[in-house]
Image 1 (cartoon, rainbow, N blue to C red):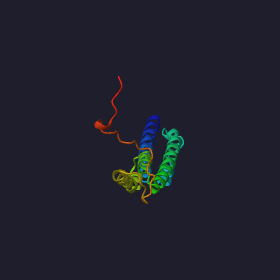
Image 2 (cartoon, helix red, strand yellow):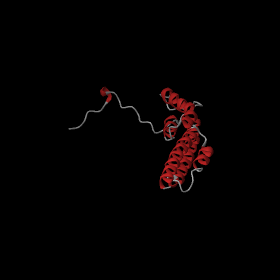
Image 3 (cartoon, rainbow, N blue to C red):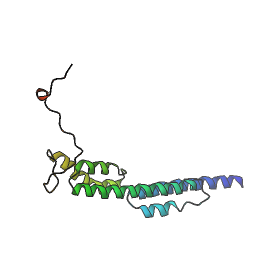
Image 4 (spheres, helix red, strand yellow):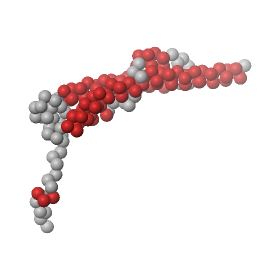
Length: 147
């Protein structure tokens, strides 16, 4: 009888591992609600059960952060703040879903960075990303150092 119980526990562990993998794939593909529902199908007495709540909390936090960073980057792009927008996009988790969402915005930010020798927004008005550094003067224009 003990042998059957051990076998059953092994099968529950295998099943739980498979559920966790499938849930992770769902999450990475942008199906948060379905991922959570699938993960929560793991029985409370299964060895993997303690990690379910932590995983759900981690996913929800990651999702909320991703949405906030995406929104922030869209606002920054609208103001022509290319570098700040790119930095926001780089904070988003690198999953297939988020990569698809941020790709066009990242391309826009990179194009803005490449094309903004002068700090101008998309409307052509001054005021792009003000955190940029000024280029150093050429060696011939530098003041000699006092020794």
